[in-house]
Length: 92
Image (tube, rainbow, N blue to C red):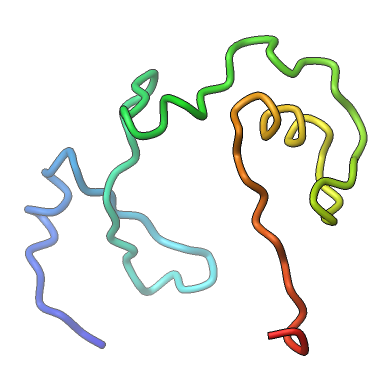
């Protein structure tokens, strides 16, 4: 779908990001810009991983029936993150 936009206005905006993809080099990808470096939004602060908090965890573990990296299990347990359960199409 083609949409007429002012690309200069989007590129000048600090809240927008314009990039391309190697899979579609002739198309521009316009999205909301990432958060500034070092800034953590309020709604994500509870998931912030402190330096060295889960350091040294290697390998994979089974967490809620899903095999994931040991570091991810440590973060989930410390921050109370519920794992997303994957289901097979036949179970839906």
